[in-house]
Length: 331
Image (cartoon, rainbow, N blue to C red):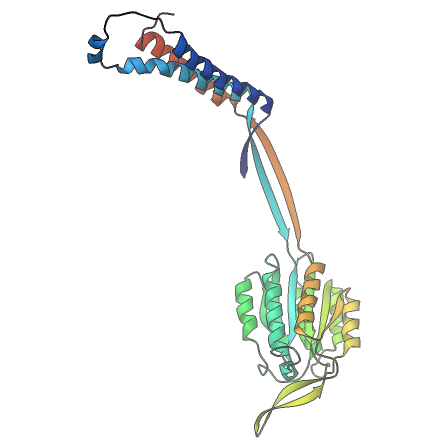
């Protein structure tokens, strides 16, 4: 809740100019309206030290000016404005389905495809604090590395741990997609999304990618597919009896199938031939999938002039007591 003080009739502030004018008149009066008294010598008065009452009489004018200033502020109608904002966020549930087959070690993306994919995905996760996000990995088979969670720090740590060789090699796109669908099908989020990233052709698994996409459509899940890899060939490290050697392998991505999967679920297919384009892909998905944020504002005004009036009356009463009780001045 936010409280702000403002004045409804600020034009009354012009009356504050009367205070410096009154101060000038008071100073002029002290200098020029004293009664002259002729004496042969003032030596006799040097032994007398002015008492506190002599200085107290100057406070009378000060108290009156403070009271006048407070009354002017009261005329300007001070008000407090109480503002409250109720913010409700309706996030999106997102499953990241990431290929971890051996071909993801190709170095056409720096330092390689899988590390580039992990770095960009971590940035994407960090940019969506209001969404639940999970992670499925697949190669020859698939499994859930992290279920849907709003604990993004945990998800990022689990994401960084994935790598090639965790499971049997191959490219089971259909299984990876089906596992992600299974994690989203019971979700109550207004929007359910799968981001599937692969660099190959479906060649393993028990579920056809088209069938998995049809199930996703049935549950209202939108699928964005990303094909990773340059056009042509790419250097891939291969373990041989002589150690790690690099071989040029043809980049094969079943773009037609990935496009069908996305189109079936009202998603979109992207091709990322380098890390910069992969970053642009995730930014585009981030732009397309925005969380819904509702902001409801409440405002209430309260008049606050009474405190100024009371304080002014206290000062005037104090002036009256000093003038007629303490100093005993005759009107």
